[in-house]
Figure 1: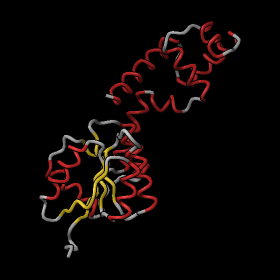
Figure 2: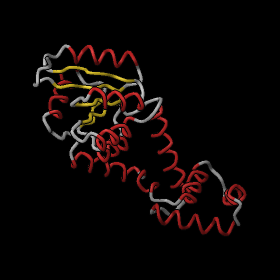
Figure 3: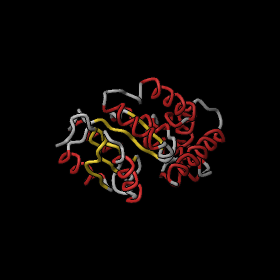
Length: 219
């Protein structure tokens, strides 16, 4: 018979060694029971529906699927299940997206075992550790980095942004996008105004910074 005070946990991570390690560590806690684990989003959603955990611990980045999207689907289908996002590195974009998806906590994998167990207990008890203030600060950092500015661009402007970042001249952009060079000049002026910039070199510098951030996420 299951102790009603036991917190039931489901794990999603695409690395088997990590899943097994987490399961072993958490099962050693007297009040936590790992009721299932999966290596991809599809199996996780099926397993969670069958095992009915109190808390789902979800890896942010998966080879198959996306942990944040899994969180969103869990919260929509099973609003009583709390979600903890587990990630290898701090990422403001992922943190904001996790908050929007309904995650209760955002934790780095460097966390100690007892800290993760305490986080599971806290969110199972109804605490919201990924609070609005934390999300607001992450959003402010994204805005300062220029990442949110890019999201407000039209598809055409985003293509233009990438080409400027790649060092294309107006003539080269015109050839690439099948536009008149005068039209490209107008697009560039609009793009600069939207980004609050005055020179193409500023656009190129921002593109380089964002490429570096994306490369860091992908490693």
